[in-house]
Image (cartoon, rainbow, N blue to C red; front, side):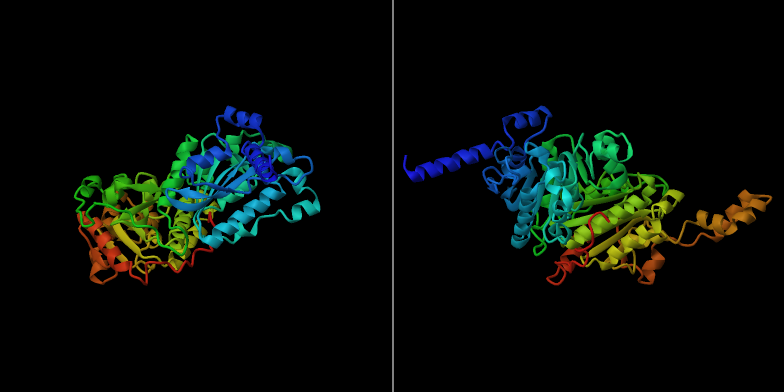
Length: 515
């Protein structure tokens, strides 16, 4: 064997060993938990044969750990997802439980910089235990391993998407909550630190799912946007979300081919809207009728259920839809809905996605609990995001739009390009029943015939809530036939998405994720 053959043979042997990560036993243990390895996950996500790994021969820089630490707990490189180039990284549980050592951190920083420099989206397939104890111990160990600046100053320059596919603490959690979109595998945990650390720190005993399972994040935190029963389902969610995103902040989202007539009438909407204004219905059914081919992708569908946020297409254009959901809390936004709306507006504005607002709300959901959750602040933060957004915004009042919520849903004077209403719309400061109770409550309590007096007062207070007075004074732009809603929206986008407006000014790109 000549020298060149020897060298190439050694390289081949090293790479074959590197493909095993922490070794066959660790791979078997991962499969025994019903989970895929980092490389298997990348194969699931990336188009076949497109992944080019960078740093395959990395190892831990701790002496004696070289042969069992190939990749140092992180597999990273570039590949294609649905034909589009992207950076992909995956935590490798077979190497020191996917914890972050010196080389791991250096690689992660390098791949982030590569993505930003080349305008490539970032996919993170995470599982791991955070900072590795020996590498991070001591003042010298921790001083260069605090929160990575490239994560803190990403400013939505490229779409970032994360799947939590195993118990994740520390670094994987920081990456997830800093991402534009997060899905989590059911049965896993995402938290700052694990249950054992929690018990040692303060004596609390919780299971991983009680600490940071999908239900915790859907019900309380909003730190994940979706969940999946299988790893394959999580991967498909990443791909679907990605299909609505541009390649980077310098590009527009891609048009989607459709044979759906943009001027198609939607006569069925009036069969969905109840005759009685106090009856509930499912706003999703109206959305499905309006958008191209009835296809939507909900964002945070299990969090803040009184508000729908969803991606869809209208005449091939990607749009973001913000809609009250009467089937939950009568469509009244609470603290979670405010948080959800703010995050969605920031996301759409950063990636040049026009916003459609569909109103049906009796006002904000007020309570002692809401006040403790800083409801006034959350309402105004939502409004600030709305005021700073520069994408085209179209607002349609379908049924009720009452009080301050009329403003937060992009009512008149809130920066909407067009505000219209259905003839079924009711627009007012408050409902007459509430107004009478507030102003005349004590008087009615002393009345000998409160029922009759209340009836008279309601007649006096029956201000015209129909949209015609606002339309007459040009406070809204028009009243449209409900079955022409799709036509109106598609036609409006034709005129709003000019060369001047097709890209946002991205004033919200620097807003923190998760606000």
